[in-house]
Length: 77
Image (cartoon, rainbow, N blue to C red; front, side):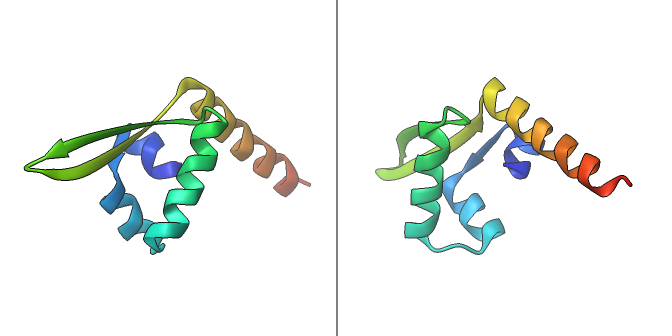
């Protein structure tokens, strides 16, 4: 999510690399984020190869920001 906040769009291979995740695990996590409407997933073809691109939604941005606000509250005495 933080990479999507920073870049607005990322392809599957980039997300796989930065998360050091397996293809299957990342697919499951992206599916869960999409079901919650935190991200959008676009599937296209480039030179006859499938390409998956993810982008964060407004709902996803809000939830991510709320998450960090909660972390800061927990840290503050």
